[in-house]
Amino acid sequence: MAKKKGSRFGSEELELDMTPMIDIVFNLLIFFMCATKFRSQEGMIEAFLPKNRGQGSGTPQIDLNEVRIKLLWYDRSGRPTNVKTPREGGCVVLKIGDEVFNSAGELEDFTYRGRYLPEKHPVWRKLYEKLVAFRDGYSGTSEKGLPVIIDARKQVPTKYVISALNEVVRAKIKDVTFAAPEIPY
Image (cartoon, rainbow, N blue to C red; front, side, top):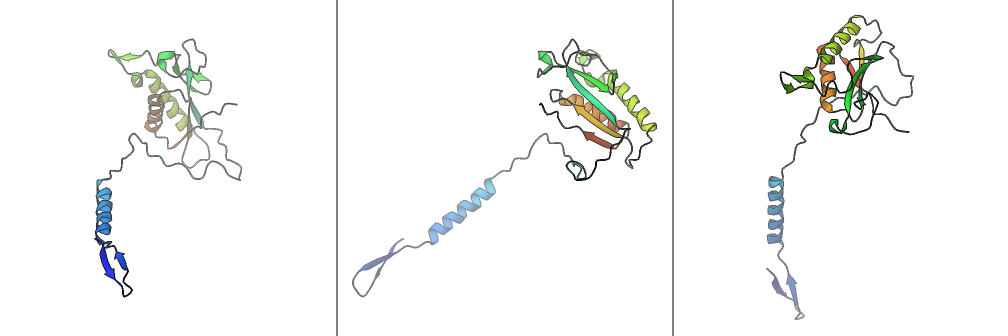
């Protein structure tokens, strides 16, 4: 509330009392601090990326015994394609080196006990057995053991990448990395 203050020259000055306004500002500040909800991100996979890889000034160490699991995206006729979804005709083909583990469309058409369950396909068992054979025959210099790179095209659904990662973990391989996506020229 404004107060009138007289002076000796007869003019009046107004003085504003700021206490109620400061009280209101603090009350609003406390209200917004208590009412704010911070949304947690859903579906995040916690990953600890290696700090000793990437851009560096030194010469990278190349292990010739590394295994590269390729999850490629083909059409039903067996040619690479850029369609976005399986409904448009895209299929996953799993390869290690030149060895192809399945034909185009085999994973997408697989049913297990009458249900569509591509993660139960025998191709994952074959991948596991191949990884165990590579792991047991590894004679490289890495202290972590056999290095495995999972190289998936960007159109490949995440469930297939996770299935490949599950087989790598099941084979007790600890040195796993993901390949960076291809950069179109």
